[in-house]
Image (cartoon, rainbow, N blue to C red; front, side, top):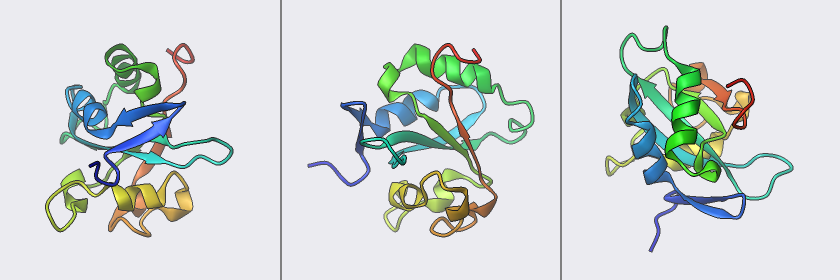
Length: 138
């Protein structure tokens, strides 16, 4: 039985949050990734969003273009996150009572800038970006 948040459905495909998080975690400069689905107005299903905790000092010179290329190379196209939330704190600081990543709070805030910090403590300063479809800006 799946736990809430372990998968989401996007573009008629089921996406494993653990698989995407594991893959993104191998990219240089990423300390930890928490992947979850978010609702996008006018679209069916949930788009992928990756909350990323970056290594110390990586934020300033992080290779965003490289991350997008890496994601498209290593993941099926439908599994590449559409959005990235850059955390000001570690992903683990938003862990649930059982020390698992809390996808529910991140998913509840979604991609609405006005919701940042409403559910995720300390999340008001997080940045939300989007990864353009393959070929655009790459």
